Each structure stands twice: as structure tokens, then as C-alpha cells.
Picture 1 (cartoon, rainbow, N blue to C red):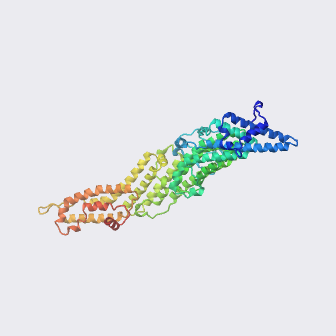
Picture 2 (cartoon, rainbow, N blue to C red; picture 1 turned 30 degrees about the vertical axis):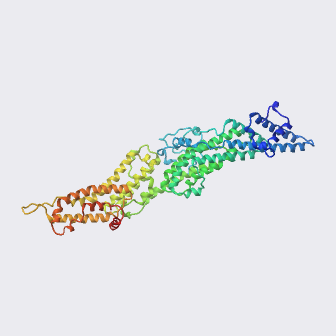
Picture 3 (cartoon, helix red, strand yellow; picture 1 turned 90 degrees about the vertical axis):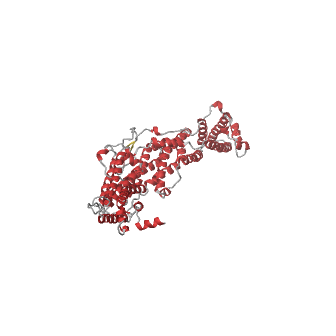
Amino acid sequence: MESPENDRIPLEQAEQIVLRWDSTVSEEARARMIFESDRQEINQYLQAVDEIQRSMESTTLSDDDGADEESKKVNTTIQIAMARLEDEFRNILISHATSMETETLAESFSSNYLTPRTSSSFSEFPENEDYSNRGEDDGSSRNGSSSFLERGESSTTIASYRSMSSIREIDLIPSDSIYDLRCIADRMIAAGYFRECVQVYGSVRKSAVDASFKKLGVEKLSIGDIQRLEWEALNAKIGKWIRAAKVCIRVLFASEKRLCQQIFEDLGTAADDACFMETVKGPAIQLFNFAEAISISRRSPEKLFKILDLHDALFDLLPDIDAVFFSKSAESIRVQATEILSRLAEAARGMLSEFENAVLREPSRVPVPGGTIHPLTRYSDDVTTPDMDFTDHEGQSPLALHLIWIIVILQFNLEGKSKHYKDNSLAHLFIMNNVHYIVQKIKGSPELREMIGDSYLKKLTGKFRQAATRYQRATWVGVLYCLRDEGLHVSGSFSSGVSKSALRERFKSFNTMFEEVHRNQALWLIPDTQLREELQISISEKLIPAYRSFLGRFRTHIENGRHPEQYIKYSVEDLETAVLDFFEGYAVSQHSRRRSQ
């Protein structure tokens, strides 16, 4: 702050300069800003402030009677100068308080620093893990095939996967304005106006941070607000939060930290850290409140992969959080992040354990009505697939194998439950429904699909199609057997070559069997519309041509006899319509009423 001796100006002139810029008495002073003037005028004002500050120090040491009067005058002048500098400080900050362009930065972070789910490890979540014992000096790298917690069997140290190069500081304010801000801050702090300087800085820069938060989609939600959200809405917000958190920690907060250092470093009383925390502590708590709310929310299996995503993202950010919030005053932020990480790991463990227990201990022996999806399959939601050949999955992470093991148990459980159906056709439909549900859930989860692999997904698809084929054989072989020619033809000079009595029995048998199938299977349910329609089409492709051909060959033999309506109860169109009733979960009478409406 010291000016060169030859740059010093007389005290009286210094006082005049300060008073000339007193905005409380001068219209010109209110209309203009000093730091928007030329450099000479700026330097002149700063020199005047320095001179008054020196005079104040010297009068404090003097014992002269006139010193008190001089001291009061100097104190009044320095107060006017500090009020002016505070206004100038605020004005410079406000002129550069626009939010940063976050869209491009967010896009770059969304893919570059998200680890593929296949790298996750169930050993990521050891019991009572202490995340505060992180290996700070470990610079080992991580790629998509390695576990994101590289540790030996007995190791309790979590290694960072990368260097601090992930932090991307950007210039928030031009260098000439930073120089002016530092000149002002230096003089305000030296004059005892540290708190005022910090408050002005924090209020303006926090507004800029809030504007950047808004651009990134970081909402001001309390923990209670977040926990009251429906899972579908929360699910979408988690992905946005992960992208935003990367930008906030590695760019926004890091750049704010750098700006504080550029302006306040070495000005005493840890001013740079005080201003940084004044600016970002509230936004940082707001940011982490979202992850905290998720970590303590009600557990359910469908949340597992999003919980793991949050865990991955926060773990990756932990070294950066330590780097940005390294000071003692920022310890609460570091502690909050560490505790959230531990709770997310505990939540993931709990969800896996909960699902595993549900699969292993589900005791029900009562078949699900209509062969629809079992509640256990719905409960498993995003983590359900049957029958895994572990030899085909060498190199899978422990987490993937653990999930696969649970999935295998689920398949055996469902196979066992299918045996409680007395009707084999319904048992096959039950398996088809449940395996199809599993396949659709895998297809709907990019993380699980990557873990399971497309080749195994094809095997699962084949399994539910196999169950559909077995259903058709169990149901329709007997029905179609009625439409065979064998046993209908007779030989003899007085015969037409067709046994009318045998033909009547065939039509009666077909009518009886189809009526029973129609009545029963209209009540059965295939919840997935596309699967239901595919199976109806497949049935029609076998049944309708066979019936049309049989009816075409033998119709006249029945119609030329007595009471043909007792034997030919269905036209081809009747069968086509009846097949559409199958697997809708309604009684045949209800279908008739619905069609007549």
C-alpha cells in the first residue's frame, strides 16, 4: 500500500481530494465513479487515502493537545474515504457479476468424468468404511475396466483415480479490474474495514454464483422438498445434479477460490478464505443438500443404480472438494461431502441386502392369478435377470457378480412358483410374463444392459419366447388335433367317404375345447400390450388357417344333415374376434358387452 516518497501528496490536498469525492455532499461525486475515470485520477485518490492513513497512524502516536482535534478530522476523512471505496468496490464487482457460460462446460463434464457402471465394485461398500482416510498422494489412474476403489484385501485406503487436472479454473474478472479491487481491498483492510469488505464481496459474488446455479438447473430445494418428490421426478433430477455438481466444484467454486486469492491473498487475516466462504458456503450447502436428501431417503431397489451413480460422482469429486475447500473454515463442507458418501454406500449395501433377502425368503406358494407378473419380479425392478452362466462373465466386477447371483436366485424362485399352477399352459405363461418383464427392465436401464451384455440379453429374450412356444404347445396342440383329417374318412360303395358321426364328434370336441380355452384364458393377463398382441397374432396364425381349411373341406357334410348349428358354432370371423379376448384379464361375458358398446 505504501506509495513511493516522491508520489506523496500533502495531507491537506489529500483531504480535499477525498472530500471532493464524498457522494453525500457532491452531486458530481454521486454521478461518477472514480474507477471509471482515467488512471491518473484513480492513482491520485489512492495516494490521498494512503496519506490520510499515514497521518492517522502518526497522530495516534502523538501526545500533543492539538492531536485529538487532528485525529478526529483524519478519522472523519478516512470514514468518508472508506465509504467511497466500498461503493467503488461494489461497483466494480457488480459490473463483472454475470453468470459464467455453463452450458458448454456442463456438456463436457457430463461424459468425460462419469465412470461406466461396469467398473463399480460391491467391495466399494465395505462395512464401516472411513472415507476420511483417503490416499491424498495417490496419483493412480482409472479406466473403464478397473474398480473405482483400488484396494487390496486388507486395505482401508481409498485411492484417487486422477490428478487435480480435472479442476478447470477460469477468469471471472479481467486482470485490470482485479488489480483495482486488490488496491481497494488492501486499503479497506488496512483501515480496519475488513468485515465491510468481506460482506460487500460476498453479497455480490454470491449473486453471480446463484445465477450460475440457475443456469445449471440447481434448484433451491430443502431436504424435505426433495424427499417429497415422486421417484420419476427425482430420477431425472439426479442426472442433472451429477452434471451440475461437476461444474460447480471443478469450475465454478474453483474459479471463485482463485478470484479470492487474486484479490485478497497476503492481505492478512486470511481475507481470501473469508471472502471465499462468504461467497460459496451457502451455495455449497444447497448443492450437497440434494445428495444428502437422497442418501437418507427411503430405500427401494429401483433406486440402486442412481444411488451408485451419485456415489460414483461424489467419490470422483472428493479430491477436488478437498482441493477447493482445503481451509479450516471450510472443514464443514468437506465433512458433509464425506458423510454423504458414506451414507450413499450404506444405502446401496442396504438395497442389495434388502433385495437379496426378498428373493431368498419370499415364502408365497399361492400362484399369482392369471399368470401375470409376480410381485417379487416387480420388486426387483431394475436388478432382475435369471439364469447366469458365471463362466461367461469372467472379469466382471464384484458388484456385477453379486447382482447376477441374486438374479439367478430370483429365476429359480420364479421357476419354483410356476410349479404351483395346476395348468401347465398358465405356468408357461407365468414364466413368459416374468422373463419378458425382466428383459424390458434391462433394456430400459443402460447401466444394467452394459453389465449384463447384449449376448446374454438375447438368451433371455430366447427364454421368454421359448416359454411362449411351450404355452402354445400345451394349449393348442389338443385343440388343433381336433381339426385333423385322420379318422374321418371311411371306405365303401354306399359312403361319401366321410364318417358324419366322426365329423360331428370332431366339431363337438373342437367347440368344447375352444370354449374352455376361451373362457379360461380371457381371464389370464399379459400386462405388456405388445407382448399380448404378438401372442394373439401367433395363435391366430396357427388356429385360423387350420380351422378355415377344416371348415372348407367338411362344412357341407354337416350342413346337409340335421341341426348343423349344434356342430358348427364358430365362423372364421368368430374365432378371429374371440382370440382378441385372450390375456386381457376379463371374463368372456365382459368382452361381449364391451364389443357391443
